[in-house]
Amino acid sequence: MNKKIMLVAGEVSGDLHGSLLARSLKVLAPDIKLFGMGGPRMKEMGVDIKFDVIRYANIGIWENAKNYFFTMRRVFHKIKKVVQVENPRCIVLIDYQGFNLALARFVKRKGIPLVYYIPPQYWAWRTSNAKTVASLIDKIIAILPYEEEAYRKVGADVVFTGNPLIDIVKVPYSRDEICKMLILDPNVPIIGLFPGSRFSEVKRLLPVMLKSAEILHSQIPKVQFVLPVAAVHLKSEIEMIVKKSNISVKIIDGRSYEVMAVSNFLIICSGLATLEAAILGAPMVVIYKVSFLTSLIAKILLKIPQVSPPNILARREIVPELLQDKANPENIAWTVSDILSNPGKIKEMKKGLTEAVSKLGPPGASSRAAEIIIKGVRS
Image 1 (cartoon, rainbow, N blue to C red):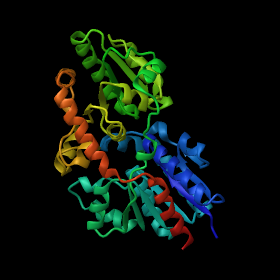
Image 2: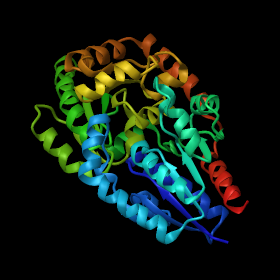
Image 3: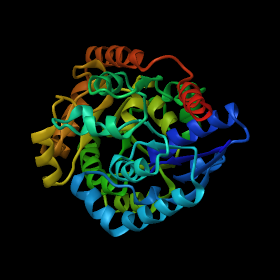
Image 4: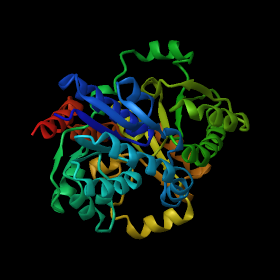
């Protein structure tokens, strides 16, 4: 039997989920060969990485278009050759919808079974693209309950396996222990800065975060700002931006969960990190900025009122979202200050986060997803 499974991921979050899936696949089938596109975490779990494109990951419609034509087109042609040479028994696409859907169209003609793990977010858009995904993909594995609901409505073979973050987002230390570890004063307010895991996010959001930090520092003189670096290739960019600012920020390699757990409040980029913060019960304000073109298209096509995962899960605004022009230093600083000074608002937010997280399913999501894939390969 062909024991090759190809995994294709293209961003930091996809690399994380791909690594968890790879580990579970290896447990179920130790002799299986895993290869494809991803990053360092997938490589650590035994995936033969043909292309590491994590550093090129971007966000936004126009941003992804530029990225594709200048970088990803070459990778796309190379990955097609890998498919032809290796002829895998199954290909698992992990998020990264622009690249992976183009690859799906190519693979469909080859007759190789396709699994989409963490499917495109077309359930949030006023388009018929979800139907296109359903027609291309043999099995969709959703990690959010509303993904399953939306794709089932358009006729997809879809299953919700739960969210893998439930298994990994844990901090085995007390607040005092974390403060000692990170050299922070537990008696002084701590604000965590999370500008994202992509170059475009860091460049757009970090300067805004730092200016809001300056305002907050003028209101709370002893406040501590901490920034965990999401990926190694972002560190020099982050250090350069922080150096140009007028605020002191403790930059830490990794340890995102510890920073989330110890912080009194987070200023955080919309995306996967907001879900991790929700699991840890961290109060936050979510911010985001994209190009004018991307924003214009989103206003026309987006059909959901919220954009951050905790709010989407709860189907209401648990955490404030400051997007585009609203994501300015004054608004951010005022929002943080207002909530921090109101224990009732903090309590209500934490209650809402607990409610949202309860919808992510029980532990063991990666194992359940791996079981579905292995079953399909062996059938």
